[in-house]
Image (cartoon, rainbow, N blue to C red):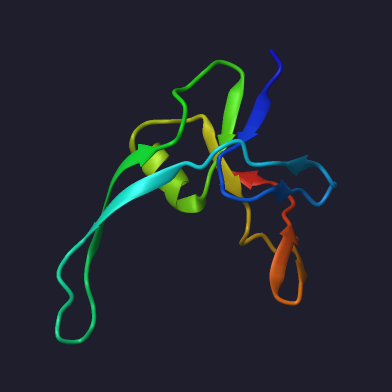
Length: 104
């Protein structure tokens, strides 16, 4: 079976090989914030994922690391995130321009 990757981050993702995945939508994790304390600190809790299609055979969804964590916690195995911490990331002026691969 052929696997197709769909990018649900808000920007294009480029692999070091030159392969590019343009955004087809944006998946996000809902969050709720507590009151801010006297030190200017609050707590955040994460909820449901929005904007991510239901699992479909042959499809892998590229999402942010935060969405990936939430998806894994929900039992999803069809999501990956760009490997932005990988030592082979290519950078220009401190910004990542491409990644070598994706992480699960």
